[in-house]
Image 1: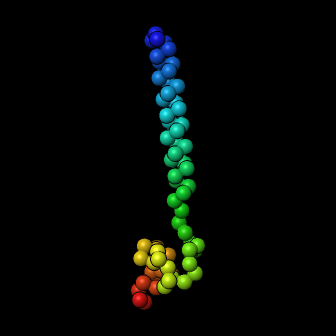
Image 2: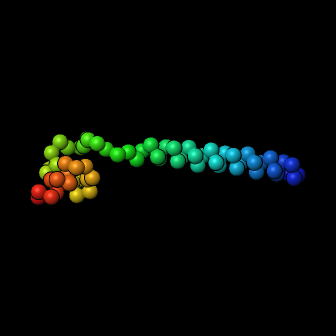
Image 3: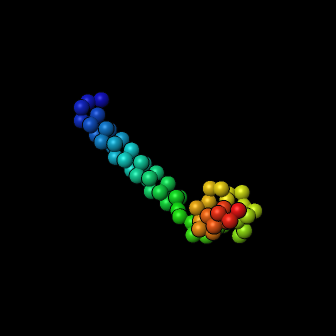
Length: 65
């Protein structure tokens, strides 16, 4: 492998690596969303995720007991 082939291979690998990282960033960024409505349970009192829920209704339920 001469110098020209090495630089070409290095450039290709760099471009592919950047593309892979950017794809990963875009995929994982879209998975984190702010929920405005609970999809698990309509009633907070019986929900197993009540302790970590950030919805206003859940906060009110925790405060009221």
